[in-house]
Amino acid sequence: MHSTCSERSSKPTREPRVQKTLQLCSNVHSNTIKEGCDKQDCNRQDCNISMKSYSGTGHTDEGHSGTKQQETETIQPAVMLAGEIQLPPDKSISHRAALFSAITDPAEGEQILENYSQAADPQSTLSCLRQLGVPIRTEGNNVYIRGVGKTGFRPPAEPLDCGNSGTTMRLLTGLLAASGTPATLIGDESLSARPMRRILAPLRSMGCHLTARDDQFAPIQTAPHDGIHGITYPLPVASAQLKSCLLLAGLYADEPTTILEEHPTRDHTERSLQLPTEQQDGLTRIQSSLATPVPAQSARIPGDFSAAAFWLVAASVSPQKVEDPTSLILPNTGINPSRTALLNLLQDMGAIIHIQNQRLSGREPVADLHVLGGTLSAISPDPSVIPNCIDELPVLMVAMAFAHGRSVIRGAEELRHKETDRLAAMEEVLARAGCTFSMF
Image 1 (tube, helix red, strand yellow):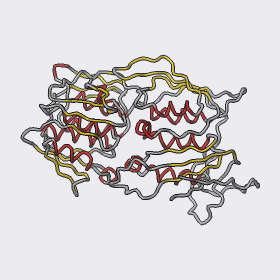
Image 2: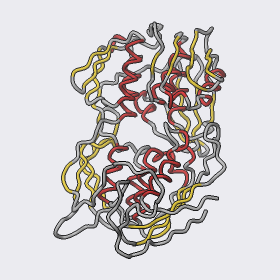
Image 3: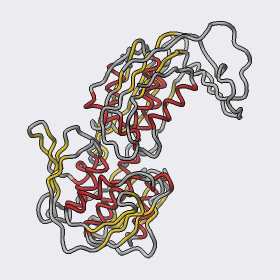
Image 4: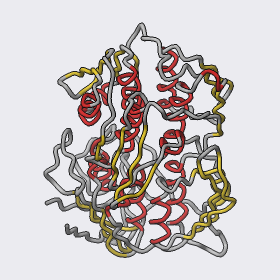
C-alpha cells in the first residue's frame, strides 16, 4: 500500500466558517484503506491502512467548499495534560461477570460485582438476564446477582432486547441455544444489520436449534433440543465474541468443546471461568464441557483499558515542556495482556508509560498507569497483534498521525464489522483534520 500527503500552504488562514475544525493535530498526514471488502460477509484479515505524518502547519477546514455548514464544537490545543483520571468500568468484563454470575450454582450465594459498568451495552445484559428470571439488584455502581445455575433460565415472556450490544446478543445466544431455552433476541437497527452467521453455523453443528432473519441477522430464535455435543472448532477469524459464545455453549455438552485459536484474542472468558488452556502446534487450545464448574464471580470490575487508550495517546503526543510537563495517572486500569497491545505499541513508538502497583482484581490484572509526554516514531505492527487492540485501532491511528515517519497497519478488516464501519469513519474524520487519501 502507498499513500501520499502534501503540506498545506503556510499562508495566513482566514477566520474559519461555522464548520468542523480540528486544531489538536498540527501534522498533515494521509491514510489509505484497501478496497474490495464486502462489509457484511468478508472475513479477510488483510485490510490495510498506511499513514504518513510529518511536521506541518495548523489547519482548519478551509478548502472544503460546497459542504453544508453546521454548528459544531472546536477542539483547542491543550496547554498541558496533568492529573489523575478515573476510568469508567470495563465493559467487556462487566458483560461476562454478569452472564457468568447468572449461571453460578445457587449454593454459591449472591455474587457481588463492584464498579459494574453503567454503559448502555452492559446494562442491556442485565436487562436480558432479569427477563430470564435471574434475581438482580443494584446499589449505585454495585450489582448483586443470585445465580440460577446452568439450567435455571426462565423462558422470557417478551423478546430479549440487546440494544446495540453485539456482546450481549452473541454470548447470550450461546447460553440460551445450548441450554435449550426458548427465546427471541432482538436489537436496534444497527445490531440487526450485523451478521450473526459466524455463531449460528457452529452452534447448529453442536445440535442447537436456532433460526434467524435471512439465516444470518437478528431477530434470533432459540428453541429446545434433544441434547448437544462438543465440537473442535478452529476460529476462522480472531473474534473473542465468537470464541466466548461457543465456550459457553460447551458448558452444556457431555464431550469437551475445544476452540483452536491461531491469533489470541481477549481471554476474559477463560480467566473468569478458569477454563483449561494450553499452547500446542502454534495454536491456543481452550476447552469447556458439562463437567466444567462455574466458579464464583464476585469481584471489583477494573477500569476499562479501551477508555484508557484515549488518554494514553493524548498524553503521549503532548510535547514534554519543562514549564508545563505532561504527567497523567490512570489508576486501577485493567492490564490484561490480551487487551494491552496498544500500550506495548505506544511504548514501541517511544511513549513513556510507567506501569505501577500491579495487582489482581478478581482474576484480572490491574495497575496504575503513569504516562508522560514525548515524541513518537512510526511503526508497522505485526498483524498477529491487531486482534488484541482491535477496539483501540482508531485512536492508534491518531497516534500514528503524530509520529515521525510512515506507519502501516495490516489485518484491520474486523473494524468493518463493528456497530459502524470504523475504517470508513476514521477515513472521514481524519480527512476533516486535513488528511489526503489514496485508495487502490
